[in-house]
Image (cartoon, rainbow, N blue to C red; front, top):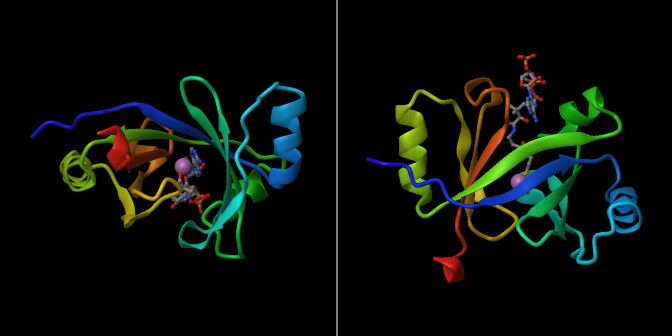
Length: 141
Ligand SMILES: C[C@@H](C(=O)O)C(=O)SCCNC(=O)CCNC(=O)[C@H](O)C(C)(C)COP(=O)(O)OP(=O)(O)OC[C@H]1O[C@@H](n2cnc3c(N)ncnc32)[C@H](O)[C@@H]1OP(=O)(O)O
Ligand SMILES: [Co+2]
């Protein structure tokens, strides 16, 4: 089996305040396309996408006390770079691939911010980078 690594979909950036981060990306970075923020309870985060010509920044703010990014924000109160997300054509194939490599998959695939299944691989097995694997949205296949 081969894993087909696709586009870099987004860079996840954790923030204590999506509102403050939107102002930063607009006023300091000069981003022109910033989507509306929305709650994603299934992932325990509030999300806002900032578009670049070749990828997106995914701003994530903790949603609720059990948020998976609560510990990260406690350690990095100003926020910071949190994860990289790569697209794959088939989430189940990718899941089997990473498990066969001995990489620790965190939980089971769940619906991500783009409406397709995603899973995370532990940073300790990914050269220190928390890695998100996302099935490519259908219209891009
Ligand atoms: C909306 C959705 C989407 O795109 O569709 C998303 O992205 S949601 C994005 C938010 N969701 C997730 O992140 C879900 C998956 N993440 C998790 O399950 C967790 O965050 C873990 C990755 C297991 C970390 O959990 P937690 O922070 O509680 O554990 P911990 O503090 O004990 O950390 C364990 C080790 O991992 C390191 N560590 C923790 N977070 C890290 C990060 N973001 N990047 C790199 N390393 C990281 C710590 O420094 C520590 O290293 P040492 O052991 O060397 O000291
Ligand atoms: Co993400």
